[in-house]
Length: 404
Figure 1: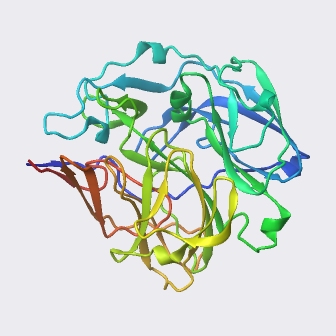
Figure 2: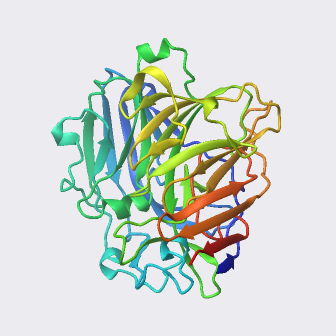
Figure 3: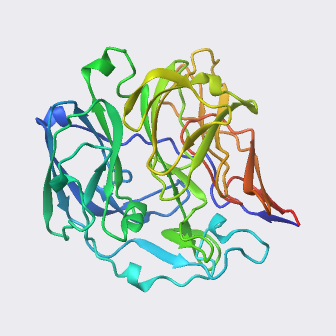
């Protein structure tokens, strides 16, 4: 049985955004970060979505700090209104054609959760991965209300690493992070600088990988409304659209040089297994992993032959060598793990810096079997680090074949 779905969004239409840098040393270690409601466009062809964000952006600013130089952050809660996410549980795990409802947009017949809809903007911030005194760790019950602020002191007495900050309110962290309350934090130190690694743009690129779903109007068009949908067989949400730095399937054009990608899986539940392809063949030899959650490894490591696995909140520090690529070369990063997984972003080797080109669409085939769930094969997408999966109908015309 084959069901062909339309393409709700064109892949690789948006340039990969790079979050604003907030360098603590430039402000004498004293930062003030508002937490605001805002509007964000996740894709060129989507209406704006209502979001919550640090400084009103999705993701929040990338904060950079130096080891041994304490940072004080005034987290100012300026949220107004209620949670900008429709929360629902679909009545069935699959639709009439056997397609998992979590792999498609919309509510899939689920009623909006009125308790979630009434959530006001209480928040608390957790700096995930930091060595932090208990009073400033963002305990889930230490929340502060709209109009209030919290002053947190972070010693930064730890080695260089990529960590991240996010909302941490008891019982609703998943909804608040889904609404946009997450951002990256980079700690730097002298020892790491002695290695001569790329630091800052254009050759150091932070990648916050998440997944999102959106509502549908009566005509079946995407509305931009954020939807957090589960089903009777899975308490976690596995949305079909991969979002990297706040954009669905973005595109990055790169120079023939070595790039440093600071990667975080910021999805609520999804695990990614990322594989880099060139002309349909694995190109994992281009990637060297130099760090994980708490900083640099003792020695660089090659990726496993089946790809880089990142569970929720895990980080990876990667060097990717594009130096031997000719202008116009195309590679693809695919996710081969989890529900509704397919390719996600595109980029090209170029002699120009930070130039973004449109990429040619390929065909994505999503095959479901009773034992393995959804497996993905992506054909012909151009390279770009930064995305990881999608659902039926998300990338061009998509055939979903159900084996029975």
